[in-house]
Length: 327
Image 1 (cartoon, one colour):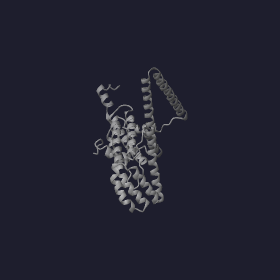
Image 2 (image 1 turned 120 degrees about the vertical axis):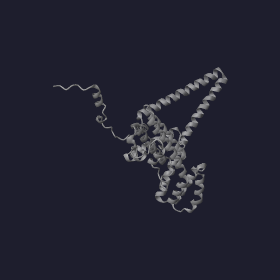
Image 3 (image 1 turned 90 degrees about the horizontal axis):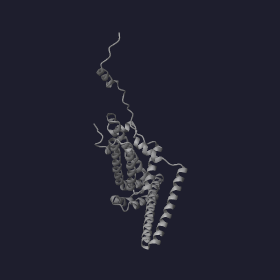
Image 4 (image 1 turned 30 degrees about the vertical axis):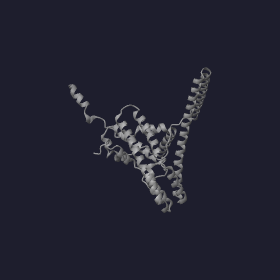
């Protein structure tokens, strides 16, 4: 004998029974926005692509120069006043382009100066060369000689420098007196960038908005960190520095977060109680902090030795105070 059909409401209740739903995956968010920014920063065109870009650029520049020449000579033939006015504008435009080019070249030189000081400091500490250490300290004092935020540290360093007769101790003294304030400024910049990336990722559901925000925030953060340590990188210098930072992190496999780090950053496994998108925001913020620490290491004129390297978990905890519950 056939069973009577179930009422429609009973069938709906069984279909909506939470106990019958598949388990929610507990995979840890991977920070897809920051992974995308890292992939974009490391993309390099082929040799043929670079040659094509150079060829089109050269052709465009040549055509623009010929057009400007014809424009100015044509106006001079028609009206002397208008012709000389056009010539003056062309000269101003060319001068502005030269100034921008010199500015970018100076930015590369400043970044190279920081790299040179850091390499010399490492060599002086490794060989215990007091003379080289004094030259490194003199270079640091010259680098920050016109900055008011290092005036107190430079004064203290000048008082105690002559008393130190050990290369390692002298470099440690210079690091504490000259770079402690700059490190604090850089940490504030990193925390602000991590907070911005985490907030936009968690609250803005637009496609690619988190990737664009992460790219802009990280580029601005790296540029500001370079300026804090004396780099003052230009546009191309900032892009090169961004590539170097992400390149070092990708090579070291550092663009990943573990369960333990997320637990310490988010307050004891809070990601499991929040939405997936909020978890992505926290991870993107943590990866932004990690990029900022790597930028500090690349822009700092001395490696971390006497002062402690900032911890990513501490930076993110301070950055996300109020955004992440600790209960």
